[in-house]
Structure formats: C-alpha cells, structure tokens
Image (cartoon, rainbow, N blue to C red; front, side, top):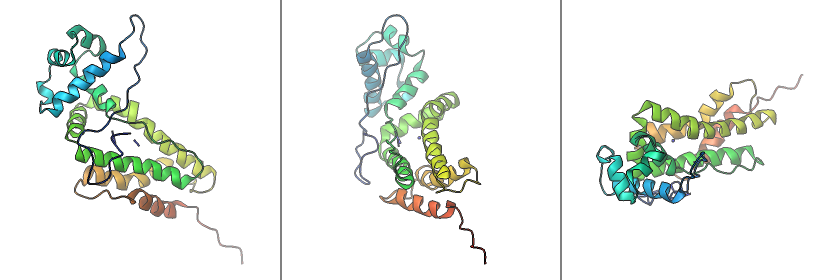
Length: 226
C-alpha cells in the first residue's frame, strides 16, 4: 500500500520516474555473525535490476540472484529461506517512511497522510517495477498479511492517532466509531488508486477529500435554548 505516506512518492503527476528511489533499509539485529548491510543491498538491487531488465519473478532463482549480486548462494539463504521471503523485503525496499506529523493542525496532518497515499498511487501506476513486485506479494496471502502487519498497519495506526486527537480536541465527533471515520478519509483515495485506476489522482485531491469529510464529521452545534 505508496512504496508512505522519498523517492517513490515524490514524482509529479504525469512525469514520475520509471524506477523509484529507495531509502536504505535498516538491517535487523541478529545473534551470531553480523550480517553485511552491503550484501543485503547488493542482493535486493540485483533482484530489482533483473526485473527491470525484463525477467519475470518466476524466472528468478536464488542461484541466479546470487550470481547477479556477486555473492555465494549460501549468503542469500542465510538471509532469506526462499524467494518469497526475499520478495517481501524487495517490496519493503520500495517503500518509504510515512510523513512526519507535527500535531499542530488536525487538517494538515490528515492532508499529509492522504497526500502520501496519492503519491503512492501515482508511483504504482507509473512504475512497472513497483507493479510487478506488489502484484507478486499480493498474490501470496501469507506474504501480503505480513506486509500488512509490518507496514500498512503502522500507517493505519498513525491515522487513528490523528483522529483520536481530533476527537479529544472537539474537532471531530466522538460519538462515532473511529475506524469508520478513518474509512471516510482514506476510502475515496484508495478507490481511485486501486479500484478505479483510470481515474486521475490530481494535486489538491488530498485537500479536497479532507475538507469535505471534516465538514461532515465535525460536532453538530446544538441549538441554543429559546
């Protein structure tokens, strides 16, 4: 899900780069012999390079990936038990962190989150590389569930935190389910980006959605007693 909410998301509409710029992934700590960040990067870059050159994911064996990366096959298998696990990290490498929210303005934070989704949608539409990797991961329920739990869910929680703050401040109705309200904000953007890919994702769309939804979820003013 655009990749947040950096490189993949910063292209202007109509002129995005074919290959998004990827931030460096943090290498998780493990016991025993330390992993080489350079080897991790070389392996992931090798996969991306081969896909860009026209290889299908089905044509990529762990042996071929190791040769392209200039490492031994054992080096690849020490990091990933199989190609599916490797492809999940390849997809994560195409992501970027979500936007920094300053908490000063409910509207500004909501716009930042939706703008991240808009740019993510543009990146996927215009990058054959990103579409290929995302489609592969989505087609495997276990991989997609792990990606959702480790990446998508964190972005969703960031939105819920903003909405709960708005409820506490009296800017959003507190008598409605926060999950439902979150769907009202992200639904229109996701519908265009995922369900109706022929529809445009123009600049200013995030602001329009936020303003329309905020108008509907503001607390209703109670009539003064006569």
